[in-house]
Image (cartoon, rainbow, N blue to C red):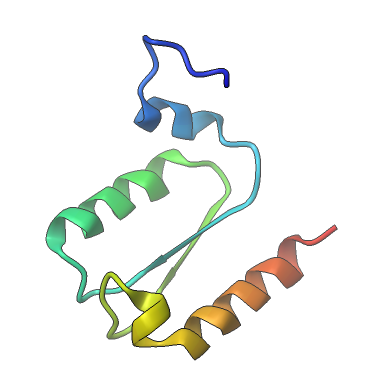
Length: 79
């Protein structure tokens, strides 16, 4: 692990060098939506997909939507 004591997890997001997917929904708690906004702003190359009605447990609220988004992401980023 290359984490150092002087580098927070949020600062480390800027060094992310792999494709990443962030799935969010408008029914999530405001604190989690804010965290998602910060992650999206700091992580280079991050793909964020927003569900129109789900909350924090997207995979339970709409498993088909999640599976479809994952398949799209993997198809785009597979080697």
